[in-house]
Image 1 (spheres, helix red, strand yellow):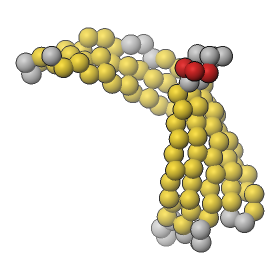
Image 2 (cartoon, one colour):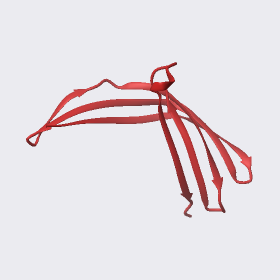
Image 3 (cartoon, one colour):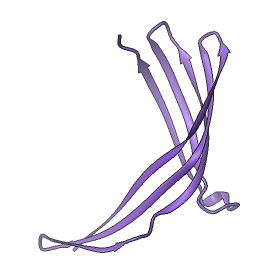
Amino acid sequence: LVVSDYAQKAKAGLRSTVRLGGGIKAFARGGVQATQNKHIETSGGTETVNEIEPIETNPYAGAGFKVAMGGKIALTGDVVAVFKEWPNMQKNEYLTSLGFEVKVP
């Protein structure tokens, strides 16, 4: 018996960017994340969907930066917090990313 849990997530929101000078930009973002969980059991090659949970929506907020390293290359990073159970901050979901951007013509 194999039990699998899947979460489908989608975000919608707004982002605002501020140029700080010297090729550096900062941004703030916020919106809502929708999540739907699915629980599947597989036994003997037969897959059974046990439960599809209702769609849950939670607000999110985040901030990040972009540093230009020449005309076509930039370093980016951000952190986003999805607020699962306000005001209990221990249940939040935190997402971080660090990226490298290359512009092509």
